[in-house]
Image: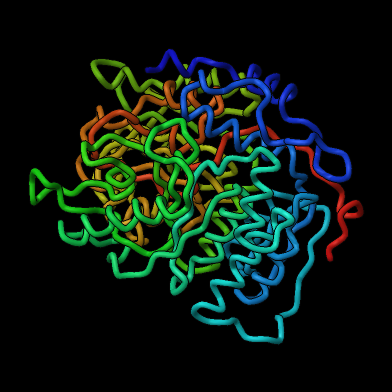
Length: 478
């Protein structure tokens, strides 16, 4: 499996130079998003990443951040996105907004006053959201949006599923609009983030998600066709009861998007929570690039633990242009961890090899507690090898809950005791990342039966180097 992913980041960059074309505007290729070199021989995760990279090459990022006071103003601001330029839009707060701005460093910050009209509800709100989604592609409605995609040669890489009654819907429209994905609204109670679904609710959720994807009309049944990801942007349970053992819980994001035989037809990511935090997570996934990484290994260099060594991954990330800091035994210790976490972390990508319980994790010669998790200067994506870290991810007194609360926008961790082999070694993940595969897909055992690793975040977020931005003067705010 891993040999298929051994394409280097430079190869992907050269490939994009050939097929990407120039920024859209009055002069662009007739079908700028249609890859002229066939990618069908590439592994499907790489195909997914290439589509996002091609999109980013063709649609300019304007060097500004727009801050809004509420959801209604966000929806109005969102309708200003187009194929000529897009920029981050955040619902301003004192926690996540400063982190994003510090990392993005925009040339221009615009604060919009609250729109006068209150937010619509129900069907009218849904219609307004769809209008905003279409506007990002210079279209007006769903039929014209599909026609635009066809003319541009764009195949949707996934489907976004949300709820019109869930506060996270702004993140859903952002991801659907930027990634060029159909947006489907699914209502119903499927638990809260810390819950476990019983078999009845679990089977109902499976059917509803599959049906929602079917309604888009795009091919989805085989990996490597159009729809290869599903992004859930709404409240639901992180776990479900195992069919084989009632006292065993499996990850909802790993059990969904599979056929009746259990074979995977898509990879699933999940964003939930307040409109402020969920939109922040979406904007991080869309607009932030990667420059720094931390790799922390608490494992001994012996037995199966040795397979998870971090030196190979660190060297690969360095080769991709990232500035890397790594800590391993004998340096890895509780004192070393506490020294590292005495300052805010400014790492874009984090790998930690650990073990423990929901409220503590091993760091070399002892356990660190939730209170020892560092504050973050910048938003981060994290892969954490650890049992139970994400069993209740909406609880700030747990490992995953604290990381997410502090600003992590993409998280890979376990909802139950998964055993070490459930996690991929960091070097394999980085090999996949260097080939262009998205982070959450690269981190998963793709051909295994449903198991216990959850993937929180945008499944199409790729680890890429800084992209060029258009000055605000070239794309004035409408």
